[in-house]
Length: 342
Ligand SMILES: [Zn+2]
Image 1 (cartoon, rainbow, N blue to C red):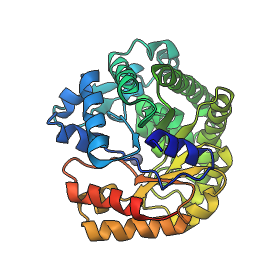
Image 2: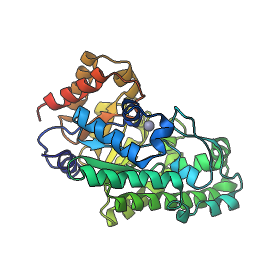
Image 3: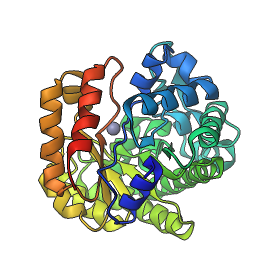
Image 4: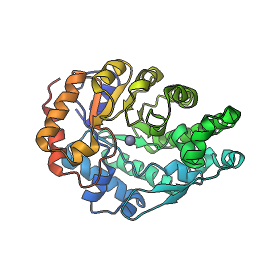
């Protein structure tokens, strides 16, 4: 059974030969390929090479070729800093004027953006080389809420969310951001991704209440899922941080999969998402992959898989693994997942 088959069967609710593995590992993959973050993100060939070599080295079932969390934000005009040795990060809003930002949130800008073109080309190259063997997840950061927050400015955005007079404008912005995101999803699938994924962690309980999540984030997630279902696109919704209080809302969206991290109550998540969404993650990228030991990792993999009885899970890291995570920990992760009998 190939990695692609193993993950696709799990996503369809069927039993694979073993628990599939996949890692949010663009930083270690680039580092192990000897590439700085700048060299990695500026070349489709480098991105493809780094990930293909990484999954082959460790025997993983899928690739998650991420570059940073501000690709779409940059495409709509957010000011981006591009450090040589770190992932890119936003440093200033695209516009603080709602009318202007509504114009900037134009889906047509996505296909024209140079950084997005590079990632999409990387998907195409990976498809040609390992398509059908290794599952390729086209990561489309970010979804409407997180994208709007970065493009408009976090403080202003959070203040406006509590201002009833601003509600209509904010919902209009979120709607445009949703359309920008959807465009990226289509491009990823056209380039040859097997499934897609995206982050919307800013809409999680670390920043906003459940009531706000239900008002400003959930409707767009439901809309996205309805549209993706119509197009037969399976996606993974990544919200890291503790999602306990919105887990049921997330499960009701009906996404093929959700990606959560160790801050969430894992036995509760196993219960809530069972039969609704496959869970990706939730191993601690820092505490386990970076600072852990092979023995601790093996015990954690078993603990997590016991919560799920080995079903409905693609085990991996709950968020991005820092570069420098010891090889022994990554190998212990893969071995423990393989050893876990279904
Ligand atoms: Zn995350």
